[in-house]
Length: 260
Image (cartoon, rainbow, N blue to C red; front, side):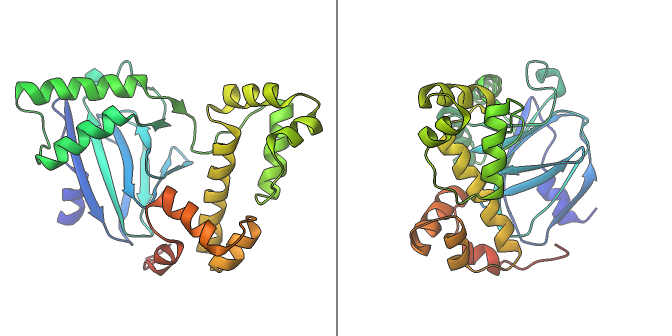
């Protein structure tokens, strides 16, 4: 394994280890598994991993949890900055036993920001060990999603999801969809949150983001992507993209590709 890749992997946890790394476009992490849990989340850019054959997407604020001894691999098609928190297997019993996406709390992010500022990779002092316990507690409390873009088997919601996947620029409001599936806006909003874990508005924003990423990879212009996603202009689309991704569409497109 190249020394650079070894450095990116980080230190074994005691009971945690923490690292923030800048990873250049073209970096490939081969398929592997570790005897500890891993939480990966992006500071800027998007972390994409394949875990047991399933693709996970994690823009900033949404982390990917990988339980101990789960096979996974990833490749980086753009320059990113990401954080990795490793958790001893003995401390993973109350954490998800399957790979999933977690919504990080402000408390979690504040503690990891403090660890970064103080260059703490392993919690050696009594204070840092207490902070490590809080981080693990925050992971136990974090809202969990099967994926960044949750789906549903409920017929009413599934039919709307299918329609939006076919036309991600569809601008119909939740009330209009409620009329189509024969219910009220309030009821549909409650169903949607219960089934997917997020609001209809956030789900649609995530769909637009994943669609935009796919179109960028295919070489579609920013102006055309904005049109397909029904933004009033390219500037509005770029603002949304930057909010979620921490970088502009053009910057991501310019990132060198290596085998991608």
